[in-house]
Length: 72
Image (cartoon, rainbow, N blue to C red; front, side, top):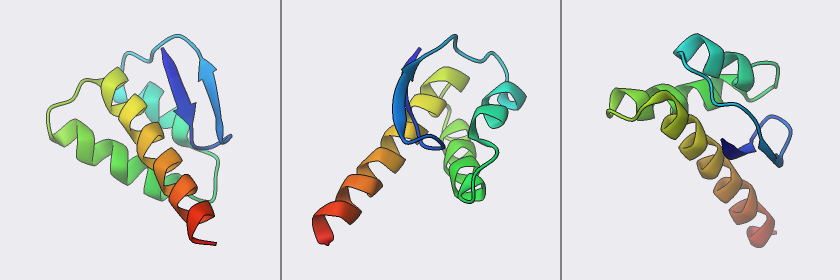
């Protein structure tokens, strides 16, 4: 899967996780982990599969980062 990793603030290609637990590991270990996981869970609850929810989570935080930069 190709996605924006909000934890490292970079894009990467990696094997897609198969479970929610595997996805959460990718989002863990950052000061913003709680925000990342909350967004991921919201997307999963809306019916997205694991890979899609993780990609959209990364995309959401990338857009927030760009909006913050533009507001400066």
